[in-house]
Image (tube, rainbow over all chains, first blue to last red; front, side, top):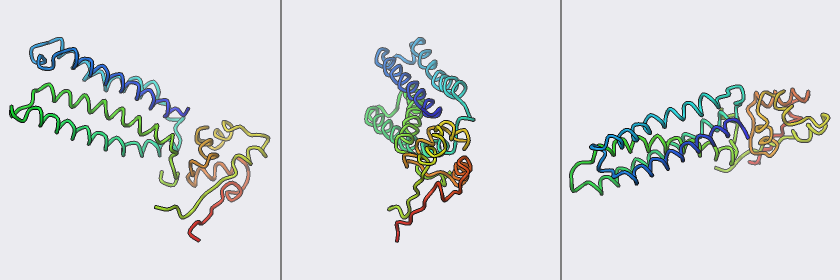
Length: 147
Length: 74
């Protein structure tokens, strides 16, 4: 397995784990208690910091081996954001539609959703990038002249 | 868009002819990863000009002896 492929798998693992943690936290804690419940807020803030930090430490610092990355890896990395942008765009559209439908009668959206949108976007971005890289390895990078 | 050309290679054959050179050894000589050599042999990847020259140099042959260009538009 190529080092970048391994890195993408680790990223995918981190992303899915954090997504599960976020879903469990939201299910177990009543989302409407965010403003009053300090413990709930701290868990959400910890996730806020934990997502980029764990990605940075595990993926970028421990798995980064620039000397083991060649032109094909670079090509796959360059193509991965195409999937990433698309998935992020659709997730934001989904959030917009869901929140509009849920809170249109109240005329305002609870503050917690700002944080949830940002955390979920970060997690989705990480997962989508990893999936994009893994698809690149599975399908073949194509033409090295595109580097 | 339909492909107008196909680039094939004889890397597997040349490795066999060069005392069964391993994929790892060729990768080191050409300055790429073993996975890229695997992808090249499977026809899943077409290398850049630079890598193509490095692979040819690793076998001490010309570029045309490793890579073949076939014009499909004809």
